[in-house]
Length: 519
Image (cartoon, rainbow, N blue to C red; front, side, top):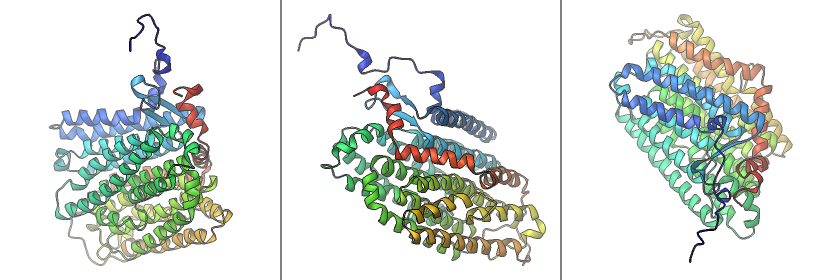
């Protein structure tokens, strides 16, 4: 067909014509900064003494960017940047709303504290084999997953942090690490394959993978498209990544094998990305299907939290016990997903903030206990209170937080979830949350009594490590834990804003498609 050379093409109908404002680059900064600094560390691979400080500088810069991003989202609503100048859905969008920005901020805070602790936990061999590039690549993947506005790129960022976390898991090449990494990789690859298959079906149905585009088209296709099948596939895929019952057995088989700082990163952050993906897909994209699945999800949530914490009660190794506590927390978060109400989702999001920080702190506490006591076993650790009373104080605070007891952070999200369960007609789910709190108190109280309160049975053969750095990082994580417990209002408001953005996607869609662009 001949083209009229004199005809003017209206590029504004297909391309982003306005230059990107400098402040809008904040939405990609949490991904770009770790990638750039990870490359810098690779270039400095022989200068291993610089690796830790470079990673700390990178994560501090990423944290500052995340603070700025969340402040802007809270003030002005979702912030969007579309790659390649093509208008959505053809250009790939990064879209930060209160949910993604707040979770990215808390995850980066946890990673920054872990990077500081890694100064004493990661030796020259770990640095030489790439601990810090893997760590920064993992955080780029986590940030990308929280901030992408596209389902396929959600899959890509999942792959990025899965591959880098696998690298962190096998660092050291011990037999038990390879065994744990194999289980971790196989189960996560199964989940990834299911995720990719569901995404292929999603594209076949909608002709787009842009989340905002799907959200505005989904009502028109509800009568003809197999959306329930898609919802179930995403529930299974992300439930496996979040370690929900009954597809959670990979987590306790692998999280006790790597260095303790790696376990802290994994326990604090990775399962929450799975919960985030469940919230984003089921609540924002498929709400009627979520309503039909709510009974099933409620049972999954109840079984995950109760069976998870009963697993913790059966353990004698600190790291294995904490792995089961992570699983139990996933069940508590899924309770809000099952309810699907504003208060239930707010409770889930607030609980995710709390769980990220507390679980990372508990793993780092286990590392400090191993440093001063020479073991992770509850059979041999004992008498830590007499020699290290400050360690006992941190342990007591963290255990109160994990159990949901005052004055720490776990109390308020559990109150919100219990109230939401009763309001939604799920009294047994409220009972399960309360019973899990009691069982968590028993499980962690048992750890406290055996390792800290029990009189010392024998002297450790290992040379004790100075806990000074451990105290510093535990103090840094204890501050937000106490703040969330004593002054929860700002955190509840952010959680409510994030939940509101999921239930009413209009502002999110409006940010991606301003004034009907791309239609």
